[in-house]
Length: 191
Image (cartoon, rainbow, N blue to C red; front, side):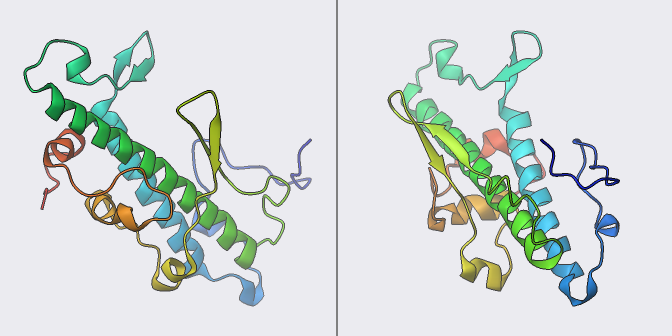
């Protein structure tokens, strides 16, 4: 059942609403705050897209997968490559959680500033992650109030990697130089 209002058509699934498309409702619409939330989401999505495009390889038709070098052939530096691959996977997990945080921020800002019923029936966005056994953990990543007061902290990939250890939910922390080389474009400085 759709909660869509009659006469309102949803935006295409491939694009976010433009800031110009959002209604202004008296003092309730803080254009800068709404735009900042969407910009945060865009920056995180861009960082995740960059990492995935550099580490995933074609597999079985149009599918892609992450298969580290040490799983494809014999290597003398096995332990180093395992450490690098684990770091890359942790960065991907952390970026997925950060993207969910950013999406929850967009929903919260829209609820506060534009439409108090926005996605109210659906709730919040969560992430499920398979545990070591036959179970899944559910997480609800959100920005802390102090992060919102200071402005949302995601500026770019390098800064995120350096600071992700301070997040409420994270799977890795710190820099791994060989891992950074694997996920960064040549124009991004490592230090």
